[in-house]
Image (cartoon, rainbow, N blue to C red; front, top):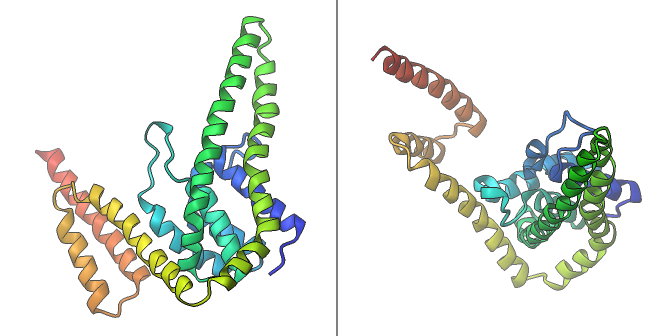
Length: 254
């Protein structure tokens, strides 16, 4: 699949939005579109494959479901992994499992971009300190709205644009060379990685008392019945609402 200049530019701009809470688009927060399932869906829309975008993004999101950034430290950046992983998978026709195997290395690239941005931002902070000392308070808005955003856009959008615009053909050739057992290995690895993300989430959840029985009930319902996951999620949400209402109302009375 060939990607146009405009499509690659839009995908690069999408990553910029996941990196920074752009003051130009205050309705879009980096946290909301940073998740691979959201970013992957938007990439799918840009490339004309929204359904594939949702499927691939959801697969990638399972790995990053336990993602946290303690103290601002980022081990593997989910935004770029979701965007580039979904883009390359749609462009090359790869399976979601292979897409996940491809996305993980780009998550490390996102970590590098994140650290460069955090380091570069110190320059703008000192610049703002200087203009405050000079009493030029209005210039703070200029620094925040123009040069700092241009810097963030260049270090985030440009690398993603280059990968998507020029890298699709190379990745497709690579996947052709890996046909057979290597691709099967990548699919097997990609199939196991979501379990790791879910396990990290369960490690946090299981520290709370009374959670394990609910998890086991949900697991057995999904395993041994034909109920749809969406329906089970709705029923679980209703149950949790009444459970918490009864539990905390009793604690309040006590």
